[in-house]
Length: 102
Image 1 (spheres, one colour):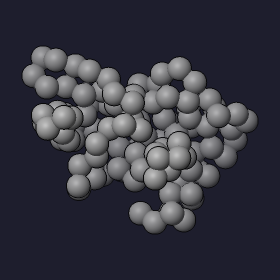
Image 2 (image 1 turned 90 degrees about the horizontal axis):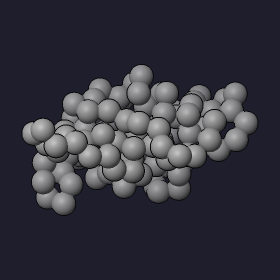
Image 3 (image 1 turned 90 degrees about the vertical axis):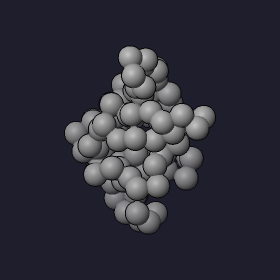
């Protein structure tokens, strides 16, 4: 998605939000509702499955990754995304853009 598309997504998610934390919550809600989780990516060259997201402190959102029985959270802004985004994956990019990572 191009910059204008990401800005439209962000605007949709934060339309009634007053501060950064509320905006992050709006984006979190859109990510949770729109992204098809269970997608594969790699962390440090190791394949993992991203099974969901969790809110952290303030404006932080974490990706919940699994490999076998192991489970680990990583900041969504730091998550290496797969070359082919999952359905709804543009919301992951919108969050990164909002955080200033794009």
